[in-house]
Structure formats: structure tokens, C-alpha cells
Length: 495
Image (tube, rainbow, N blue to C red; front, side):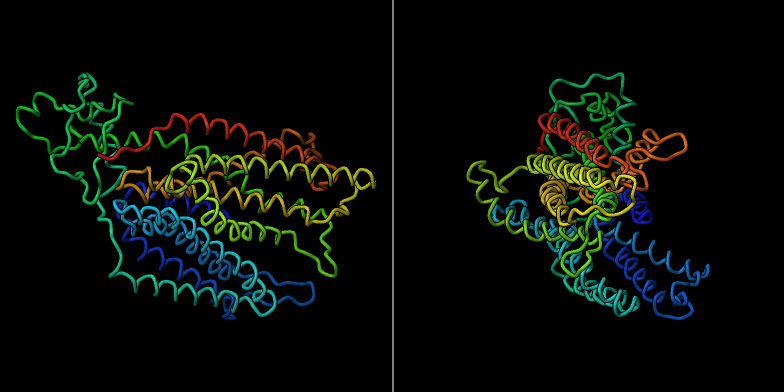
């Protein structure tokens, strides 16, 4: 997992350094992903790269070369995934014309069905592919996704003549730096109260090909100095140096990024709480009764209900909830992006609170049965975890898809891939934050010898419920901060 989180961070940095990714990404990163899958297939198929099979309970250790091939494949996949995800959503949305009311409504549905298709793939992967890997072989289990990925890549490129492309125009980071440098150079100049006196490109469109001009806003007036035309520039009629003079649109791009930052930051706490599904929820499930009839349910498989929840609720949201909400809000998409994310944050608070209640019940049963000092499962069905997973899926419908919409619609036209990458970056930072919080809590609540605490090796003798309530409290505070920031957020205004 560390490979995926780290590569997402690196790819986000690369998106900041260049805006050419809308075209380069489908070519470069799909090839990285495909090569990574091929490498994993080879490592699970060819005897030279495949560890020897276990004999009874004795499993020979893999050689350094085998480890190298395996992890090389993982990092290629992580690099490919981190590069493709930020661009594929924005690239898909670019195919809809914002000036056409019908296409604008369809673009709102696109993000819903885009996320729906991701979860369909995740469901097949976590059920069918996992069964093949465990019962048939890892070679075939990796080979089938590799083949399907190859078909998907071929299908994607077959539609190239039909796509709408945004022309790349250099690095967003460069444009941000130009505004900062230009405003610093003119720190002693006063920005005019009449913003029509600020410099703007004479063309109808922005200086960046394919991008729309942005209206001036009154916030952060210190940055407006970058668009102030000095006497020397006016005299020489030289407006060509962007490190000395920036257009209003270029200044507004930076203002948009600054305004989006608080909204973006609240997504980190949400992701930290969401990451519990793959960590402590599994630990919780392992200490519950996993028998359902004659079957024993793996604790990690309960996360499938999160996927099922998304698959079930996306059509409900898009076809039922949105038309109903549209009648009351008069909005094309039913809810604004900010409203949608706020609802998701509230649902996430409820979901982690449900997990805490389940854990309180589990610990109460352990205490009654005298199992506090016994590292054994408690006779409470693991199916009681289903509501918390289902609620997290509902939170995704609102928060995650809402983030897709928000960072696409509110970002400058030339920075959509960058902002999508930053949105996905909250997943990685949230996972790191979750590890940090867990480390702090373990250190503070444990004894001097490192034993006991809220989350000991034997969860029956701990208080995992306290940890879940702590996360619920942080989520609630995060939601309050989000509402405060969302109410003060100023929407992007296109000239």
C-alpha cells in the first residue's frame, strides 16, 4: 500500500510541474500500468521469478531477484494508476460542452457513472479474480486483468478521432510563480479601485489556448498588483513579460487555488476516517463471530459491502434523488458540489459512530462472558459490521463524487487535471494521517512497556471504541470547519 500512496503523491507533484498531461498521460501511464501487470503475471508464472511452492506449512523464502521483479511490477502499477486517475475523469468530462444545457446536465451524471464503473471493476476484482487467484492460480489471476487492461487500452485509443482535446500550455506552477513574482516586484504600487484598469489580454479568450477568461474578484487584492500596468510598461507598450505583468485571468487562477485549499484540506480528515475500512475494521471483524451457517467469512471481505453500496446507490442517486432534489433546489444537478460533499461528510460521521457502537456492544459481550483477557473472537456476528460499510459507501457517493465535480468545475480550465490530482492526493495524505493518529494514540494510551492501551494486540482488553469515537469527533469538527469554509467560498466566475 505504501507504494500506491507514495506514487500518488509523486504523480501529483508531477502534475503541478507540467500541464501537458492531458495528452501524455493516456500514452505514458497506461503503458506503465500495463507493463506493471505484465511484470506481476511473469513473476507468478515463470519458474525463475516464482517462489517455490510451500510444502505443508514450510514456505521457501523468495530470492532477492524475485522480490525485485515483484515490487518493480507493483511500483509500475502504482505509478500508472496515480497518473491515469487524475486525468481520466477530467478528460471524460471535457467531452461535454458546457455551453450546451443538455450536455451540461449529462456531464453531472458522467461523474456518477464514472465512479460506478470503477466500483463495478473493484467488485469483480475482489470476488471473481480473488477466487481465481486462490483456487486456480496466481498466474491466471494476474493474467486475466492484464488481458482486460490491454483490451481497455486498445478500446480507449480507438476513439482518439472522436475525442475533444484541451491544448497543453506549459506548467501551472510556472504561472503561479509568475503571479507571485510580478506582485512582489510591484509591491509598492497601488492597485486601482477600478479593476477595468488592470491588465487583461485583448483577445476574447484567455492567453491560454482553449481556456476562458475569468472575472476579477475583490479578494486578495495584494495579488492584483501583478496585473497593474506600470508607467514604464505603459510608455513602452511592452506587456509581453509575464514575470513582470500578468493578466487578470492569470491572477484569478491563483486566487481560485487559494480559495479551494480549505475545502481540499477537509478531504484529508475524511480520507483518514475512510481508510479504517481496510485496517481497523478488519481487526474488529477478526474478533467477531465470522460463521454464517457452514461458511466462515473472511474479515477483509466485508469491505465488499462498501462496493455493493456504491453500485446500488449511484443509480438511486442519479435517477431518483437528483430529480427530486432538482424540484426543490432548481439546480441542474439537484445539489451543488459543496452541498453534496457536506452531506457526505455528515454520513461519514454517522458511519464511524456506528462502528464505535458496534465495538461497544462487542466489548460488553466480552466482559459479560469473561473474555477480556482472552484473545478469542466474541460471539457477535460479523454481519453487524455491514451497516458501517454500507454507510461509508453512501458517504462516497456524496463526498468523493462531489470532489470530482467540485475540483473539475471550480478549477481554472487549464488546471483541471492538476486539481483532480490534488483531490486524489487527499487519499494518500489521509492514509498517512491515519497512521500518524494511530501512532500517537498508541503511544499515549499504552503502558511504559508498550502494552495495553486502546488498541492492544488483544482487542478484547482494549478500547477500540474510544478510538472510533475519537475519529467521529475529529470528523464532526472537520465537518463544522467544512461548513464554515463552504459558506464563505466564492464560486468561479467566467467572463
